[in-house]
Structure formats: C-alpha cells, structure tokens
Length: 413
Image (cartoon, rainbow, N blue to C red; front, side, top):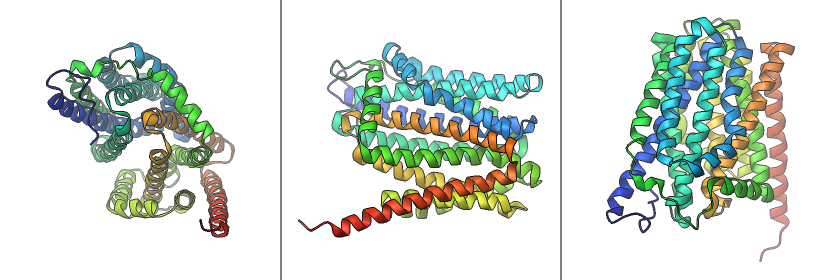
C-alpha cells in the first residue's frame, strides 16, 4: 500500500499514517458497497412501483448526473471544507436519503427512488472529491499511482460485496431490504470516516487545489491521443452497459415472467462471474488495450442476445453474468491504461476526471434505454444494444489489426 507522506504530519506520524490509510480504504470499501446496494435497490423499487425500464433509466440517470456534471463543484467544495467532515457527512447523508426513500415510497411513488438516487449520486461526488484531495495532498507524487490502484481495488471489492448483499437480502425483503442494507453500510462508513485523525485536513502549499487538479486532468486526457481514444471506447461500452442495466430488471420480471425466480437467477449469474473472475482478470490483462476492449464489447453483445432469448432462470443468469463480466473486463483495461499513462502527480485527479466522463456516457446510455423502450419495445432494445456493441467491437478489432500491421512494418532499431 502507498503510505501517506510522513514528514508533513506530527511526531507520531508513521503509526498515524498507517491507521489513516486503513480507515480511508475501509471507508471507500463501505461506501462502494452502499452505492452498489443502493443502485440495485432504487432501480428495483422503480420497477416494482410500475416505472418499468423507463423508471429504472430515470433512477440510473439521476444517480449519475451528479458524478458526471458535479465533479468540478465537488472539487471546489473539497478545497474549502474539512475533508473529514466531507468523508463522514457524505455517507451519513446517503444513509438518510435511503431511509427517507423507504419511508416515502408508498406515498411518493417513482419520485422517491429518483430523488434518492440523485442525493446518493451527489453524496458520492462529494466523497470522491474529498478522497481525491486526500491522495493529492497526503501522498508523495511518486506514490500516487499506487495509492490510486489500492483505492480502486477497495472500491471494486466493496462494490461486489454490495451487489451480493443487495441480492441476498432482496431474496427475503425485496428492494426495501436492499435500501435498508445500503443505509446501514453507509452509516458504518460514516462511523469509520469520522474517526480520521485531524491531520487528514492538512493542506500542502505546493499541491494544486482539487478543482485545479481536476481541470488539469481533463486537459491531460484531452491532449493525450491514446488515453482519449481509450476513454472514448470505454465510454461507448459504459453507455451500452448502462442501457442494458436499465432494461434488464423490467424485461426479466415482466416480459420473461421470472417474478419469484428473478433474484435467485441474478445471484447465480453473480456467483458464476465471481468464481470466474481470475480468468476475466487474466484474459483482460493478457490482451492489448484495443483487443481487450473489443472482447469486452463482444461479451456485452452476447449479454444482450442472452437477455433477448431468455425464457427462464438459466437465460437470465447468463445475461446478468455476461454483463458483469464485460463490465469487469472494461474496468480492468481502462484502469490499467490510466495507471500507465497518467502522470504520477495528477493520478488521483485523472481517475476522477475519467470517472466523470464515464458517468456522462452512462447517463446517455440510460436515456438511450428509455428512448428505445418507448420507441421499439424491450425485446428490440436488446437487439439494438447488441448491434451497437458488435459495431464497437468490430471497429476496435480493425484498429487493433491496423496497429499490429504498423508494428510489423516498423523497422527494428
């Protein structure tokens, strides 16, 4: 793990640094779990309340708009407010929004999960900005890449735990159970973050403020051709993945008719992907960037086709599992590209800027899902999404082949 800079803290800094690092990782893992459980619970509740795929798309978009458009504002807030307050306060606010959603849903209807998703998205934007500021100020520049990698790993582990928890609790208590589980986990994260040492609020004079680091990261991403193209391909896949997520619950529970068998089928798909994750990691890491992105899009196409042809639990599990596998491979490939290409001094801000770009793409995907559901119906939506994924995979395969031919023609030094 990348340690905090110890010469900028007080006398017992080495011990404090270790504790603060563990608390930051724990808070990240807990908030990621709460975020994942809340995403499932709010979308599921929207479908249960009669919103269908359009209601789920509204929830997804509401949760992602703050991440896509609010990152600069959140970064400015992180520059002016104590980081500890932001880290625990954002999670406490998310917990309050989840409890309020559970209480208000019977009377407010679809407005409750949509508003809840927007509040949780805002809370996560603030949490991410504060975390980025911590890494930007309290880790040495040469160690920031390692710190970002560690933090991303904790987020991935927490997200997987949140999905599993929401599905397991959902077996007995439905979407309300997932929401309350998310609230409890967010409260636990707030309790952990509240125990941070006052040194977490240190400001280092030679480090850029978080909002300026964010702008510098956006400029770097726009100027670097390889990163720009990698993020564009990832954004294409993120939009398709978001659209798939918006229609899947409504399709499987309504058109396919998996009512009581829906959650067990999703659990089977989730467990299958977790068991096969080492293979996904190995396959994504062994391929070059364009080939790996092309493979992830091909798996997305297979997920849409599996959903289209599903007529029972096996098809539902396959569709969900393939979608999760594609998302995992996509995250591995793009995170690897960012870690290799991003300058160490801007690594945390580059990760935040890339996350904002992907959130914006996912918002577009949610809008696409709603438009297709209204225009052509859910069944045809799966076919359109499969075609879009295959088109992206084909384009990336051509780019990978062109780069391979260029490498073969290049004379040896």
